[in-house]
Image 1 (cartoon, helix red, strand yellow):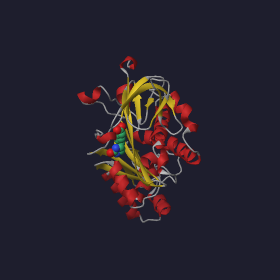
Image 2 (cartoon, rainbow, N blue to C red):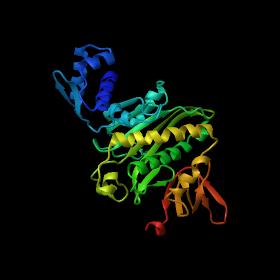
Image 3 (cartoon, rainbow, N blue to C red):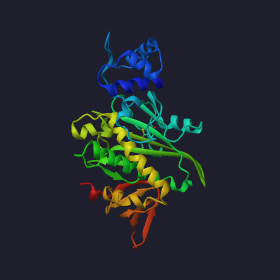
Image 4 (cartoon, protein in one colour):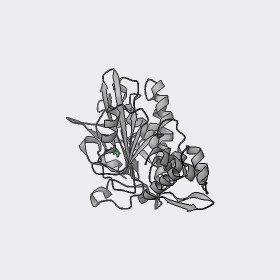
Length: 329
Ligand code: BTN
C-alpha cells in the first residue's frame, strides 16, 4: 500500500464516519480523481469503503491485518512502528529486514508479514508461519554500542513482549524462558530471533525478529506438545494490530533506557520475577557441551546464572535451557 493510501485509510479509520471527498482533497493536496483512485486501492486491499454522493467516504470495516494504517491508531511510540513495510507473504521478515538494513534503512524500520514461507527460528530451526492469524515482524535497530552488549537485547525484547501480553490479556500468566521464549502454561507462544552485523567495537545493525502465535486455532500434532497460541489458551481472538503496537509501545522506552545504561540491571527484577527458570534445576545444551545447575538468576550482562555442583556460580551466555523433569508439573 502506498503512503498516501495508508494515510487516507488512517484518516478514515480515525474519523469513524463520513469524510467528504473535498476534505480529503484539501488535506492531502490531491484531486478528487486521485482520492477516488486511493479508495479503489483500499477496496482492492479488502477494505469496505462506503461512497455516498453528498456525504463522501466512510470506512465500514478494518481487515485486522497488521498494516501501518491499522497499527498506527494504537501506537504511542515515537520511532518504532512508524514505518511499516507490510507483505502478504515473504520468505522471512528477518531476511528482508537484514537486506534493508544493509542498504541503509534507518532504525525503527519494520517489516511485517501476514505469512512466511521460510520463517526462521534459533539454531537453524524453522518458524511455522501460517497466514491470517499470527504476528511475524522484524525491527531494524542501530544501537551505538559495542557488539558484546547486543545479546542483552533478546531479554529486553522478551520483557517488552511479556508486558504487552500482560496488558492485552491480563488474565494470562506468561513466563519468560531465558533467553528468548515466552511461554503460556508451559508451551511456547512467542520466540525472538536477533541477528546482527557488527565489528567488535561497532554494531552496524541488529534485526529483532519476533513471532507470536496469536489467533492460530490448530497446531500440528508435532507442535501441540510444545507450542500454543493466545487463542488456544483463552478461546478469544486478539487484534493483531493492537498487540503489535503494544509490543512496540513497551519496547521503545525499554530500549531507550537500555542505551543509557551499562547493562540490563534496571530490568533484572522484572526478568527474574517472570522467569520460568528461576530457582529451577536446568540443563543448558550448548554446541559442544551441556551445563547443569540450579538457576540463581540472570546476570546484568544477560547470562543465566547457575549454582554449579561445587558451589561456584556458572555464567551461561548461550544455549537452549531445559527444565529438569521434576519441574514439569
Ligand atoms: C525462536 O524461538 O527460535 C525464534 C523464532 C523467531 C521467529 C520470527 S517470525 C518473524 C521473524 N522472521 C523470521 O524468519 N523469524 C523471526
